[in-house]
Image 1 (cartoon, rainbow, N blue to C red):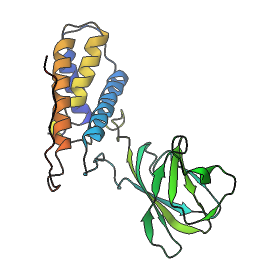
Image 2 (cartoon, rainbow, N blue to C red):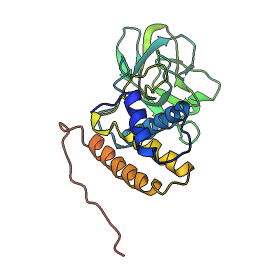
Image 3 (tube, rainbow, N blue to C red):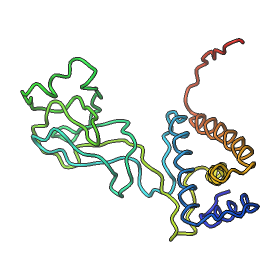
Length: 235
């Protein structure tokens, strides 16, 4: 079942109705959206080869931008719709004929064979490596040609959140776990106000977090499975 923002608020009020402390709509909104963030954090960690994206987004989590001659660095803070980019999974660069090839991620600060990023020679050519620093990526070699749409980046990004003005909006995760932001918000409210119910909400929250992790971790049913041993300490 998918819950709208209004339904989530109603369920949240039901969970905490026995307490006299007020729970303003703006505070509910913040707690529910923080719950969505927490759910996404679990999902991103659990995901295998099937990358998650909030179902409310109307495009795919792939950014395409122009490659510019003699420009080494490119800033990527948000996608085309203004959603904050959380991580970059893969970068492809097109050659002058328009053929895309994946390039190698490196870390200039910790890896060898990366002097081309800082030696001052500014070697030009088709980029073969990239370094992620801050909100940007840096290429080596520096491109020596222009190519419209020559950079393609696979990302994950923030959720499409609830808002006060859109009361019918639904959370963009599986319908199996739509109640998680409500449980998360209920726990935060109970914790702030010293309610005994915080313990029950915490148990339910942890239980559902495990379920979210297990479900999203097993979505790629068409992947070839391998058996790995699990080690446990004996006390």
